[in-house]
Image (cartoon, rainbow over all chains, first blue to last red; front, side, top):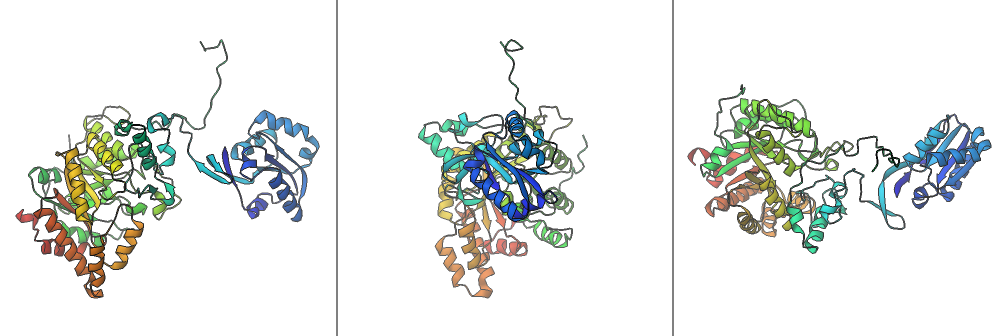
Length: 221
Length: 309
């Protein structure tokens, strides 16, 4: 799940300055769960923009705005409203917003901040447990990620800031290394804690990331 | 090979410890800005009273005059620096380059730290680096001593440092901390300075555990100067791994306002005496945090004179 938060409405209004006719895009997946770009939030945004004197030429909420071909297809299906718009307001993650970028030549504006790849703990509670480092280390740490859940990404044990299982950055956040220690101890695998982890390859996923399936029969076995 | 500083005014930390002497170190916190007069005063005041001075590296994630520059300044003024290197602000390339430079300027001792987190400091929107951390930094230096950088490339002239690290005796829970202590030794740490210790009974228990893990590494007890009841309250509530016992807090509360600093001095002098008399560890690291000028008084009250040790 890609976690997003809504930008302040004033910021959105500023983005749309000089564009009277707006087309709004929302996402049926992550942004719906985050309540930043589902049907309800899109309808609210439409009403607020209209109250500010804007014309909303159309709205669309569909699954996977990040799917570029899908987005182009949705734009074709809404051709009239899309063509009437001066610009597009995208109420989902940065990937979705850039997918819209590929579907139009007109101005595209983000309505959200994209914050992390998150786990849903319960309704409205999201936490970051994976930071997409490109070289998964979970096997060695009892399936608890120090790269992400330790504020400093330490791979060799707790820092001096650990305090009764909490992190020096916030008493609300668990010290990942206390969690890892307890987990490995429970599993009888503290020898993994003793192992020294050398320098991490931070270029395992060299930005910008790119994964292409190998076509069968071409280079594959 | 040309090492710019060949003549050392003072014996190294390694020489002191290996001679079986009780190591006394102080700390220099560089200023925020180019007005270094007060820092020079502190260095001059401490250089003959302590064996060596730590120089903090953007301590508490607050941007300051650099630790490496201050280390060289201490050298120039005839003192012995213990260069603190953190991993928060520099990636492996920058740290390696700094270490090459430090070596050619006669820096002999490096204290390897991960570093505080960015949000505790005064540049709250900065990007945290943490390309590596303390254990990996120790390994990186060992590799450089063997003539290779972390990219596996051969160095034209390597380095040699007395590699230090820190450990937190008052960490809760203590078990993961001790495992990390063990890893630091395996990664090349030759000596340790502890985070601030106040509870001597707890420190004794820590030392028993530490000596069981290794009787070869040197361990120096870190002490912070207590100055007021408010400071104690703040530290107990906000500084992780720090616990000032009730008895010390009361001693400070009972002191009249104008006697508080003297009370702090007396407490630390007593603790230093205890460390020496009971042979609890290999040295003391005095953190006076802005009150460096009273360090000579602390040592005098403790009856410690490094020229006679």
